[in-house]
Length: 618
Image (cartoon, rainbow, N blue to C red; front, top):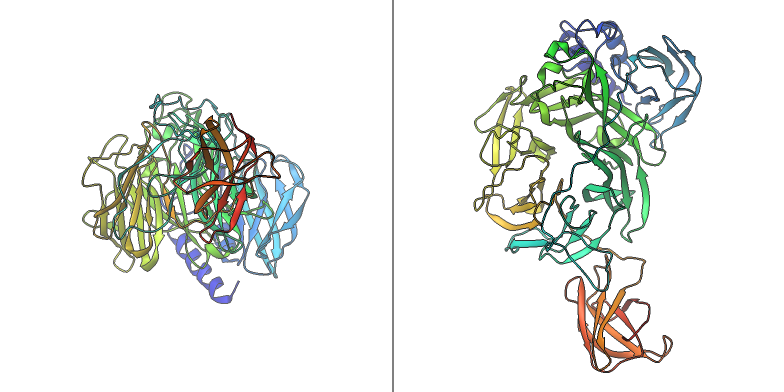
């Protein structure tokens, strides 16, 4: 890490310590009702915070973390060439912990992996060295609560809103109906959706803008997917998505997948420190790291917010994962930084976990957090109606704003959002967000907002607002606002089955819907080129002399036409019919063929791209 970055961290750290005010120490949490400081700072001793913040290496769990996992590793994240030595880890009950160091593939630090877990409730102290600097952190280990693993009941949906293909009978995704065909000016590319709930199989799905299926990946029974999109990994376009179980307490338990353009598995990103990856975020960086989130129910004294002294709270945990090694490079807990009293979600009267914050998006700032080094990230918390700009080195907030109970920036006219999702840092210092405005309703419709923070004047102004002019769409949950090339914006309505593309003036360029009751956490649009390694598929219907051959190739984007081959055997087949490709499955009449039939996929230049297995005529 350069000297300029070190000076910047020290300056910001000093500012955070000055702003601390009265704070509960980790040891006094029970007497403070489990609440946290009033502004963006970690819990714990102020002198220890200042000393840790002055170091060029960020240690996590961050100082004062009140509910670290018993299975946590100790992460040391710095600049290029960071190496750690002389690690000493001591639990107040479990004593000295042995372990070993493992390096990040980015070359920006190491993790110390203890040889045994920590004891719930104990205080852990860490000391180490890196580049001649002394490093330290102190955190408390959580009393984790059991997870209620009951899933949401399935929506009834529409049994007719399912796609079926004779040549690919295992592919049964939700239907996709385009209500406003793509108009001039619409951004090029395919739609990336992950339908779940209601009728049809859940799974990642690519569709053309006219609604024609391109690729579908059905998931095992009980699994669902979210956040299906194209991202870059190792300099190549990759398909990424979360998959797992969505449980009714409001979060997911699963893992994140990375597939290449041939639809082959490249990597699986799992949460570290004993957690399960949640459904809300999987974001890759150019450095080969992944930002993910996890939800962790923990026992907590909630009497300060009129809850039970023996309550259960669901904390939001943010992790940066080294994709190649699976190591946790950085970790942040909302409970260490956001006071319980800031929540706008009612405290339950029983032992049902209180989802007090519900972090639902992570947007790393260019340069720092995208380079595998400590920088800044923007977080959205649904249940505080607030966006937080987090300094990774201190864990505190450089600024925060929203319609919740605290805001360091004054909101301008039209800057209002409630139960929001998908806060994104945009070029030019802008921020976009999907304003659900629902559950309970605060406005008559959900909208996309583009805002401009002015830190010199401590204000936020509205730049653009998008809402569907032809229908009232109020999404109770989920959703996103995606910036597209040319100034267009795509809004996915999450719990509603709708999506809409707008131009910069708010005119509708494309509009569509999945089946009744189907949900899609976020909707994406992107150019895509796929070349599957599996062969094309074929089905034959009818009888010799009046047969129809059905041809498809799941995921192939280069097919221009199909050719039917027929003969006495697979070795002697010759072309007997052809047809241009028409959507996912192309029907080709065949008047005389057999007894063996196959299909051949051709490119725009007539080149053979793939051939199906041979099947017998009916």
